Image 1 (cartoon, rainbow, N blue to C red):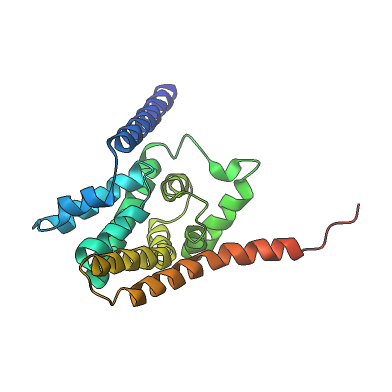
Image 2 (image 1 turned 60 degrees about the vertical axis):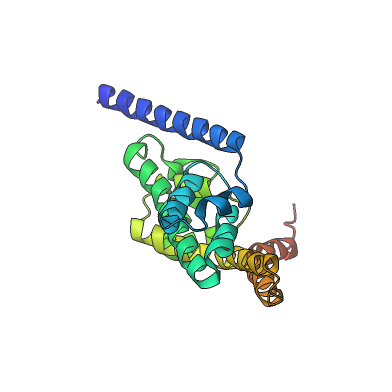
Length: 223
């Protein structure tokens, strides 16, 4: 058992080291809309490359927003939304599965004194709790994937909640990309997708805003 524990610790250390190194290299190499557009446009394997890059972004703590904008820019809104949603879901599952099957026995978030109650509520809430968690932009996408992989949450609940919770922000950024593509070609019909993107972005922020307002209105306990 002791040898097995050491082996798991080594695996966890190697995973953390690889993720940290990959994140640093990815950030140093730069990730730009123009570079992604040049790589994908006219490429017969563009959808496969796009999904692969989005999975890498999810694993390496890189912002997935740039990939959603790229999807709208390169593929247009509807096709871009499909590929951005698939890439986002696969990327989330990759991080979830990575921690679930390699390091979940080393760490038990539900037993943490500070966040244990939150973790237990997520586990009990299933996909609905995951969806609500995804609507909080303050929590990094990649970090959520890894942390939830340490819980007893069912994979199907994680996948469904992630797809639903990530959808509003995905729609918003894909719309921004589609609007940018129209504007770049001189098409004047870029205003509508931009407005739709803004509306979806605002809607995705409402749960967090409502929560803050509710907390402020709670009565202060009398000492």
